[in-house]
Length: 91
Image: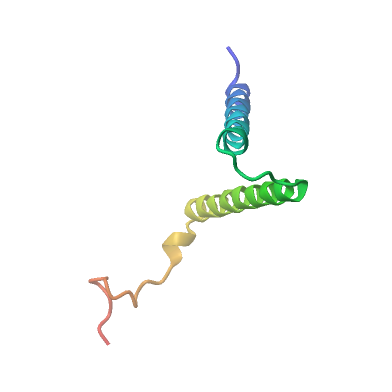
């Protein structure tokens, strides 16, 4: 029985493989079947950097959300001026 880490890495590799095949399949459908425009190497580089940047930003923001939740930063926020709170001070 493989360890949890090995199963996780295998699942991650499988997900990446499926995503790569789906991306290549969609690009084939776009260019050959639908007659879409051909992209130059600069277009592919821009697309790759955009995808990498978007996924990286999403990963970092989710990591910060989990870190904030685990360390209790969300509990320390002062919401006394929130108009929707019933226990706020009237002043």
